[in-house]
Image 1 (cartoon, rainbow, N blue to C red):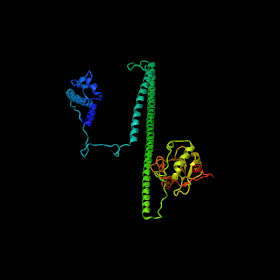
Image 2 (image 1 turned 180 degrees about the vertical axis):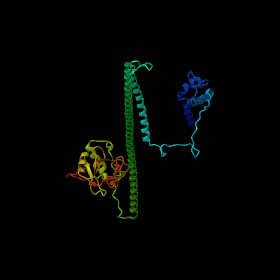
Image 3 (image 1 turned 60 degrees about the vertical axis):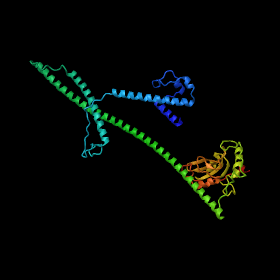
Image 4 (image 1 turned 90 degrees about the vertical axis):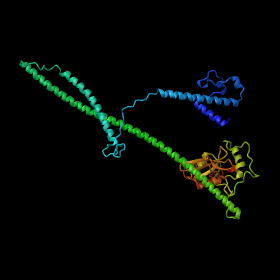
Length: 442
């Protein structure tokens, strides 16, 4: 049986049988079969006579039968479900669209018509209407309360209309009653004016409150939007920096490749025509030659170490034969080269200089070098990897055959790891009377 077809069948079976994952033998011999497994169980004695491949084929066939039964049962359930679904009654409600002159659905976009109100004005009108309704409800409640107080105050002070005044005393009483009516009317008028005044004040208070709530909401939304814009701007700036670094690395690699090609053409022309004017700097001795350096078993450059003697031995045995720290003509030690000095000593040497001053020192912690230079932001330190028979800034992709070549390259090209146009301008030489690299060459 084809193995690929078998595995594809198993994947399909897993999806169709709801993730059933069992051993073939346990499936064949279980005592309580499911509805889709009835009639396809096998005796354990029969299975014992089959090899593994036959068991797998039998298991696959049994799964196919289960899928067929499962599909038949699903179709039957779908038919039963469709029969139970009631036909929906057609509703008499319909929707009709207003059409424009072009016989298409008429669409009105708020704000396009000259008579349309601005959004702020619409919001103000809505808030004023809400404030007026709320103030009116509160005034109605207060008016009813005042009316009840006046009724209680002036009730029982008037005579019945059908009573006839027969005496002078009753005439005076009627006059007093009329005065009370006038007093009541005056009280009612004052109460109504007070209610209207309170209603207007309350309406203004509610409007101001709604306006403040809307203003605080807008302010919060503006702050959130401003924060989101700042985050988005920082993210875009980080993306731009990454793209710039990647682009700069690619450009550096391309320039390096072009320079290597040009150097190869010059060497070929020199060999062909025997010209003495076209000379290139001498190369270090290859490690594959008979004088190659035999590295000690315990000397691993990638391992950090605090032993100064180990670093000195590593430099003398591996770097000195490669003329590390020398000029291209290998006549003398480069002015920018320093011995095993600390980070603080390097910063003390560069503090008196200007942006662009640099030095290369032997690291006091690992088997390698450190490029220390002064930038506009301060003093920076970049590790130089001296493994794999080359020199390269840690994290960079450009490899150099010597330290001098690395320095001269970054005198013309910016440092790719800095993210800014920073170059190596002036070498920071020795300040003390005794050179700090004397122990490396003695």
